[in-house]
Length: 178
Image 1 (spheres, rainbow, N blue to C red):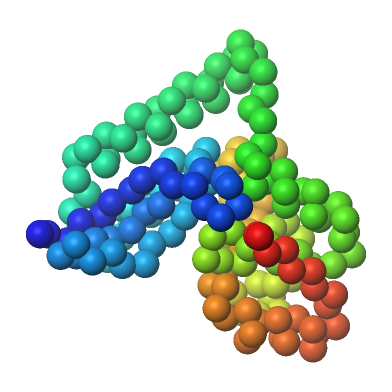
Image 2 (image 1 turned 135 degrees about the horizontal axis):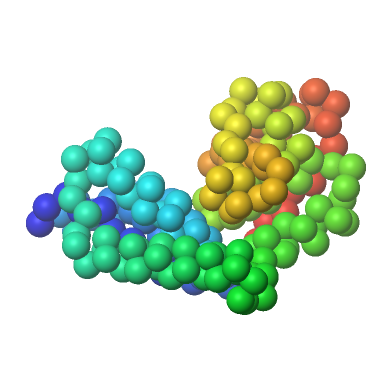
């Protein structure tokens, strides 16, 4: 079997539906990333990055499935901009993040999403600065009115980044899915 880039919708432990994009070589699944169900464009972009880095092939059926989702999302967005449809509900993950941040407004919130801990907004800027991580601008994906940022790191590296934040005098709240 060839080296393939695959994508599928899966339910994760938190109960949210997510896009799982991963590489499969000789029926062995390699690590991949999870993207929110409402972020098929991010999933498609990651599939192309993986293809470029690994030389793997994106099967036409997977490409068509992701493109159909992207087009549907774009049509929904243009309908909203025209005022034909009500504003989209935030995803369950976004609701949970906002709820946890409201409970701990003075702490940096590290929110577990799949295999990663994420920080958003001002927290992301602090985490990126203190830990030397990359700060990602996400307003282009989610169409926020003002610039919005995110930073993330693998969950298994929490033991190395958490002490850095605490030593820098930051209060940290960790939200892990159960």
